[in-house]
Image 1 (cartoon, helix red, strand yellow):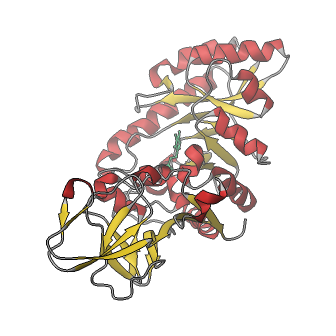
Image 2: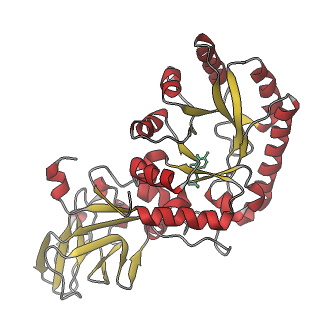
Image 3: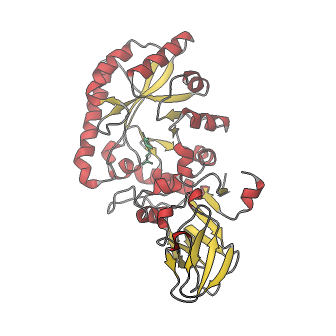
Length: 381
Ligand SMILES: *Cc1c(COP(=O)(O)O)cnc(C)c1O
């Protein structure tokens, strides 16, 4: 971002020590019998893929997971050495890109496998692949009941090496779906057996995402693929009421009061005149809006922390500003710090809280914080 944008005091702070804490905490909880993939797709869920991956590589993560080949290229360009799995495979014409950057694709279809095999054969190369088995998500992946047929076809692709078989849970975060999750685990075991029967000996079989790893010990396999818990987002994507590792929020979001004014009782503020003062009020304006990823549905609903106390958002959230009622805070001044996500004194606002108020999950909140919000990184890089 240019200098001018960075002067705006609206900042997402990424605490790399909290990230490392979460990784160690999860590893202590889950155990050292499995490898660890850090899923850093979508710019590490909005936390910054390069800074997060560098720290996690130093902490001993075994693999990285991205969604697009381009995200893997970004990590390679930043010097990440550990293996990178592209969970979304690749798109036609990206064979060269993934090959030269040593990005391993998760293969979901015969066509994808065939085109990569052709590419590899033309270079006399053997390319490692992971094959994704769809055991119930119904999205990408080779259907579990077509696994044996797929294995037969793969036998005729000598320029691909099956390094891993994987699947992905649809509802591991929901204990009322345990039977379905257990069904996914057994469908996957049967699919893996079908590949072994054809002579394949994958180095890894892996199933678990964050809720799988924490709530379903029978799904650990050879590797767990963790996103949410590394970023401390356990509050809404892990089932309630089970034992969990301690986690710390990695991202906080703050700004400062830019404008302060007295507004008499009975006036309205903001677009649509949706809030009317019921008393003589002190109204603060803060430079963050929905264009920064702060959800507009928090209009007249959200709150922030100023001077260690909550203050309500009043009126509509606009593209670049929110309006806060600070009448009850005699300490509010221009440049007073405003915490939108984070902790100040006894008050805390989690990404999970914003998610609950806006009918989504914490991942969408952190992924949604836009590039124009300056990033500050704290902790050992
Ligand atoms: C995103 C993703 C993960 C990580 O999920 P979390 O819930 O964030 O741990 C794991 N595996 C696959 C295939 C994914 O797409």
